[in-house]
Length: 80
Image (cartoon, rainbow, N blue to C red; front, side):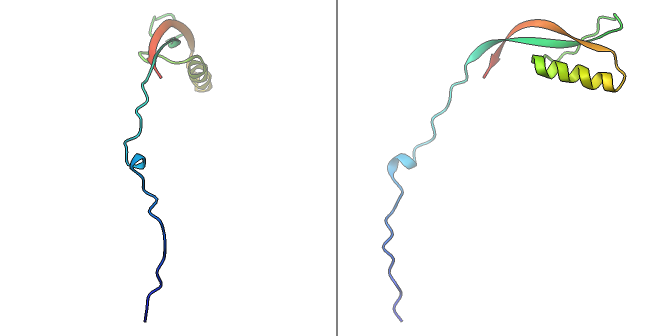
């Protein structure tokens, strides 16, 4: 029996084998928030949040009966 010959062209080109271009991360100043206890103890979280994250954290804490609020920490350099 004879096998059928397929005439497929090789689709690999040299530029397909080059490594992908690395994207440089740029540093940007962003406003960050911290979460503090509402009892006046001065306790604040060590983690910094974006505004939507801080609002969500406060909303979830209130659901569990914890008195917290979000306070502006300041502008921080963030890599994006």
